[in-house]
Amino acid sequence: MTEHAPAISTMRTLRFHEYGEPADVLRLETAPVLEPGRGRIRVTVHACGVAPADWALCRGLFAGDLPRGIGCDVSGTVEAVGEGVADVEVGDLVFGTADFAGQSSAGTADRAVMDRWFAVPEGLDLTQAAALPMAFSTAYWHLARLGLSSNHTVLINGAGTTIGYAAVQIALIRGARVIATAGDTYAQQLRDLGATVVGYGDGLADRVKAISDHPADIVFDTAPAGGALPDLVQIAGGDPKRVLTCSDIIAAQALGVRDSFHEDPATATDAERFGAMPEFAQLAAEGKFAVPVAGTFPLDEWRTALKISLTGHAHGKLLLLPGGARG
Image (cartoon, rainbow, N blue to C red; front, side):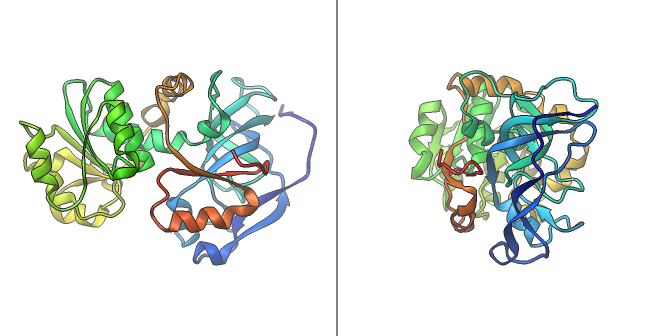
């Protein structure tokens, strides 16, 4: 039997009814509250992250039934529990991912159905919790595919991105030596974490060679600008199979570099992506792990978040707060 808080029939949700540029097709509208199916829960959303992947969905990536919502990363309070769910109760605080499969609404709404969730540990703010799921899981999975170990020297290209920043911390926590490429925004924070920071751009391989007496064992590329893969292969001792990119997919194919799509992410289990999430959420609660938050906005100011995101220079996670107040 499904467990419910007091019933509410409608909610605000940000979604699209046709494909196109997100500013043109997204609408903040009223829609029926969705029921959580078997193995799902519904939350009152505190915060939801938006990202370039959402804009790609608006343009037709993974096309499917419409209307469709956006926003994957969610935190909130459980208000309905579907059949077969035994690990949470109404009123619990959770964070995780919104269920996109066959749903007409996702995380950017007053209420969201979730397919993966984790308890919010004491001391972890709900807004910070909402920044964690996809940045952490993406970084963790890619580093696992590269075979990260404590005796590795790891180069993270684009360490100022949310995924890159998470990857630096994961590698350091696992005992690896980390070289990070980053601009001025997060350079000092990365140094404070324990990474060796070098500037990105032309001459990257030479700059890394000047500070490291041997090639990087593994290289993870998260930089959205692209163009660095030839240098990254050189940094990896000339072996393109020691380099994995989640951003420069086209160039990777030409160079023999591994990329997210050809690593077959469909085969990744929840344990591979999210198994360590409780561990790192606890670290986040203790101030030992974080995904940078660039800005928070009430749900009706979604266009401001979109505009910042489309610049490609958000410098952290952008979060919508359906409750209305800025975090």
